[in-house]
Image (cartoon, rainbow, N blue to C red; front, side, top):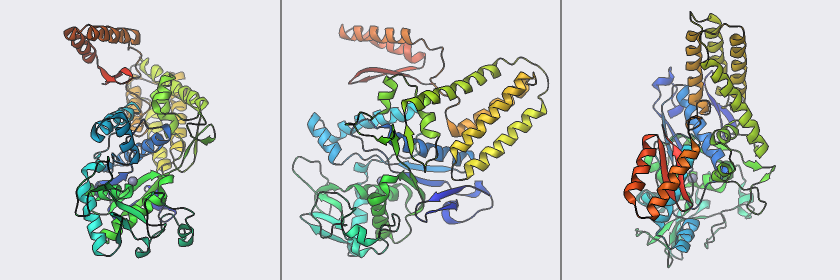
Length: 475
Ligand SMILES: [Zn+2]
């Protein structure tokens, strides 16, 4: 049996067949097309966001582990009420303001060892695709205008509500509906294009000057990057309704073909058993946790380790448990590195490694059961430790084990973690950074640049932010 994934659209775990046409060999499939709803760039992303982004990473890494090729897009929402208000209150252009948070976002992904998607389109660069969708919907009579804004008329789209399985009465009574504050004919309808307002950025289009509604951005970027039906669309469960429901309505309404084959939704993250909120004091950005001294590696471990369809209760205690699990891995790596024994590899090592690989694949094929996969991994380490205890691990065998670890780490991304080597002298780096700040204050830019170059040569990259200088290690 191959990979099976839970599809929100059918409500069932289904065999995964990219492109909709079954092939004999995985290598024969065209690249798996994946679209993930990305961040709105108005501030630091919080760990609930990162749970979803780390799941996306697990998904694409596991697909590659299984031999699929991957073509992944994650959008950047760089225009909406929050980004506009943020840029206005700081007196920056929308572009400068969102550029800052896009940069921070990518740094955060990097520190969590999240692979970069092949495409990261920005909403503000996808206006033509949005206009194309509105025009097609308009030609089919699905769009109406009110106060200069364009709305999608849900009563004209038959399949509305299929993904979220809300019956139309539930949607109609306004129990759950899009909270866009604009006037509309029907409470369920949603805005496609918002008429320009004073002091707000706007784009000139055949539908007047204005800016996009949120939902159309994703439909437009899916079309812009992939052209037609895609294999997988991911996002948090909170996006199923109305956002993803509306994406389906727009895309299928406009192009008359299926939008997405597999919808994958990641459950909520709770903190200390409750919904994260600033007022409760249980709200963490990634940087809050790093500032408290937790390692990005432990954060990655904790966020990746539970199944994506289960709620994850995030606690600081959980992070400490993650650190302990990682210490077990590191201890094993040290033991492996200390092996000096010459001679042929004990056949038991190959058998164990092959069995682990098979078992791991079987477990992960079942809807990406990562907690089971991690369990199997620790059992494998346990057996290897016993072999070392018995003096049966030779250099040749250790090399084979390392290969097996590298292979499974192409999925986990927390075994060999860049930036965790302890040969980095933090005190010295911080002292050099302080010297560089002094040099800059004294307008001795030559010296400041010199220090920067010394650090770069050692793989230490500096970044000047509003909160001071940050640094990180790149290999
Ligand atoms: Zn989206």
